[in-house]
Image (cartoon, rainbow, N blue to C red; front, top):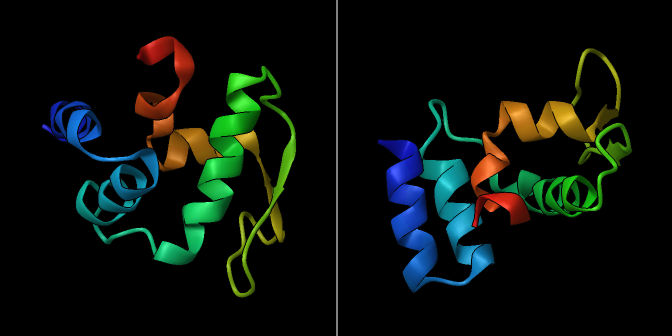
Length: 88
């Protein structure tokens, strides 16, 4: 259901609005909105083929005890594949 909803939402909204909606509506518990910018970086990195590039996380957010996480981990965790260029 989440991917079908995301595809439909992206047809009527800009990517920032769709990303915010996706993080809040397609996850339980919702992914906090402070993660929008890191998710945008992850999408850009993945589209550039930089799957192992480290992404700085917002204050108070850790990934396996670290303040950064690899692009591939954030793409997988936040289910961002619907935002990648090869999925349009």
